[in-house]
Length: 254
Image 1 (cartoon, rainbow, N blue to C red):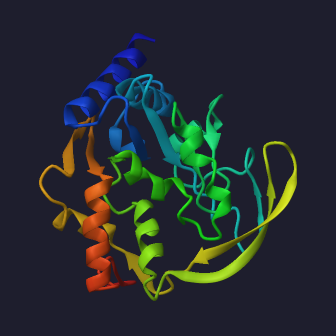
Image 2 (cartoon, rainbow, N blue to C red):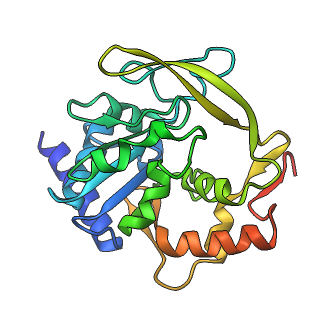
């Protein structure tokens, strides 16, 4: 237990030294293997993030489930459908008290004072990252995005910027899902798919555009970590998309 607590303290301290704001709202993307040996595994990482944010902070993690809920299997159980983006967010999803937004393919989990506000309206969108999604709400709360050992590419928030501009590769077909809500009620929900046919995402190019102070970097255990401020990210990303709708993609295989 001492090893787990020491690892938790180290993770929290490194994140705070890097620029994570106590009491703020943070969305964390993560790779457990990149951290090296972590006593207590994913749970220790989650506790480290929560410790850094403090009791007034709100922690969010993507719980994307497009591998399980899709056109071939159009069913999404809010409490039961697993995520497909790694062990840390899946462990977070299954923790007691964690909330989950209602979106068949791009749900988000959260805990903390602002979690319900961030997550509760996602079902009102008929696209994965629309105006009611937590991805769109992050900059309104001066949110930060933490990339814990996974580089800058898996930036789901960039989809919400894309949905404002609507580049030509973005949308696929509309799919009607059977959604099982936490109250066990079954409701139909339409959600348009993201397409990206033939295109690879290059959201790491955001580092060329961010102004000073908008990108923090450092090490957490064995992992390279980045923290991005969402307000300036939105400003520069919107400008880049409007100048070149293909700025953040490249032909697959290039």
